[in-house]
Image (cartoon, rainbow, N blue to C red; front, side, top):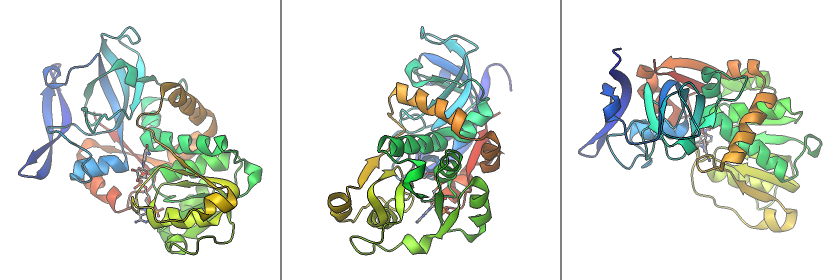
Length: 330
Ligand code: NDP
């Protein structure tokens, strides 16, 4: 690569069809922004799958460089907060959706969207966590805020072999929770036990809505699936328990009754990583350093080149990607 040009995955739309290509760009092609970052790694998240495949109306304007997160080093900065050489991480804020993202060797963004690379993490590990792992931590913190504790009982994780799910299982197990993991993949049972799950629940068991109140099984749940599975999980949460809902891999509609809320005091807690305020972001990254064992992070993640992203984008939408995929843009 010459000094002047760098590579990025660029999405364009032609007659309603979204196309992708790896292109050579220059700094002048990048959008306006305060901080120019030399990107080391990005990652693959469900939303990237939607964006790259042209689904779900994630991207509103083309051309677009997708990639909702990245980690790298500041090259130039017009923001008082950052200087060349600073190691940074970005997740969310509409990057890779409304603003050009991380599937690129360079990115130009607002200074306030960046957080310092946490001490003790390198950029590859930061992206092995990425948006999905960060969201998993936010879900665990949300359950804690609702009063769920290891002694409360079993905590369920849905979509457990996916990116958010894998990290949630590993963190909860490390914190001493008894974890039950829901998966549709028989091949993932050993993997989930390896991450610390004590029980694996086949997806079919929780796919039907069920009665308004079922037997109380879960002190809490991290739900990445939504739809009928979330509806079913709510009917099985124990008195006073909570569900942290962050995803829609199984559907966006929620068809439920008020019974779990008014008869069992169950709470349904929404979790958003995109606009999450900065103090909570920094707290979540700090918690990941202490509560996610590094050997588990290695276990859940693998590194792929940028050229493999389009195929993996297709696979993540049909639930075929296990754990976390780190994208090496260089
Ligand atoms: P993944 O595809 O890696 O994980 C999703 C998992 O859900 C799959 O691996 C699969 O797990 C399960 N699954 C897929 N389809 C279905 C289905 N039809 N019914 C039941 N289970 C299904 O995606 P991510 O982990 O990156 O993201 C998970 C969800 O969280 C997505 O909806 C994503 O948009 C959302 N998300 C939300 C964020 C927020 O800020 N709120 C941030 C990050 C992610 P298994 O094979 O084990 O059954």
